[in-house]
Length: 186
Image (tube, rainbow, N blue to C red):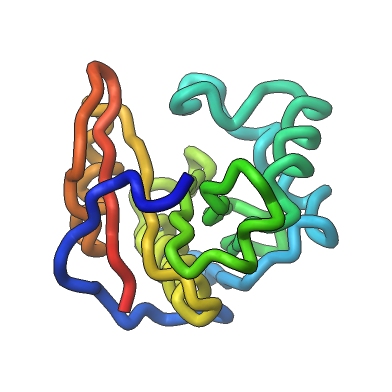
């Protein structure tokens, strides 16, 4: 369960918490808010339906509306979610998912680790949305008492690795296709 990964010695932060409104690199007004997946499920499903399958990483997001819905419902209950919206439509989604085999341990564990996943629609990438979305997710997580976050990223995904490093993630391990990274939050 928890405690199995190395984490940096120095905590990083603080990070801004949602809500946040900003102008992205393409001049669009983007709003980042905390998201209750149960209430905003349809909007997030619609974003993932539009997601280019070529940009999937490690099998997620799944393809097909029903599989996307099932995936979000499975991870939604205890996860921490933020969404970026443009003109009311979800264009980015980031989540922290508790790394616990037994859901009853989530509230009892002070050393729980959280896995991060983030997705931004292709038409909105490389405009600064991912950075603000990630920072707001980490701020929200920190507000909720989360301090240990990890992720895996495909080793050849240099833009994502650069984003994670900019925010404060450090490489902690590698497998053949994946780079594991972690951050310790203030």
